[in-house]
Image (cartoon, rainbow, N blue to C red; front, side, top):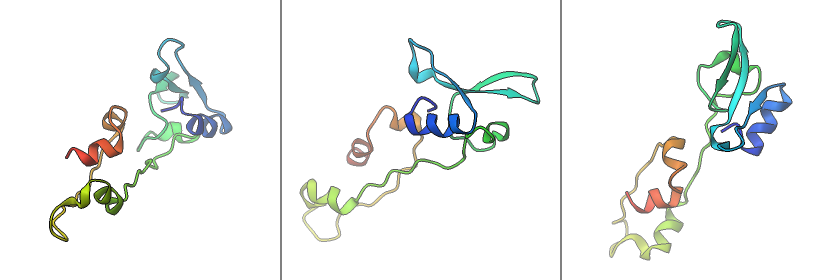
Length: 111
C-alpha cells in the first residue's frame, strides 16, 4: 500500500514516486520508469517479491507480519474450553485481500 505513511516515506527517501488518485486513495501506485518496457509503470503495492525494477525505489519483499497472543485471546473468550488444553491452535497466512477487509482478531475468532 504505497499510500501508507511508513511505506510512502521509505519509497520517497529512495527517490520513488507515488501516485495517489484523489478520489480513490486505496488505488495508490509506485511509479517507475521501466527499462524493459520503456514507459512509466505503476505498481499497486509497496511490498512485492520479484519486481526487481522497483527494488531500487524502495519496493521490498519483506512482509508485514501481525502476531496475535493466543493465550490472551483464549482468556478473553472464556478460556477456550472446559478442559485444560482443549483449545484448537491454528495459523493463518493471509494477504491484504483478507486483512484489508477483516481485523486479525476477527479472523482468529471466526475460524
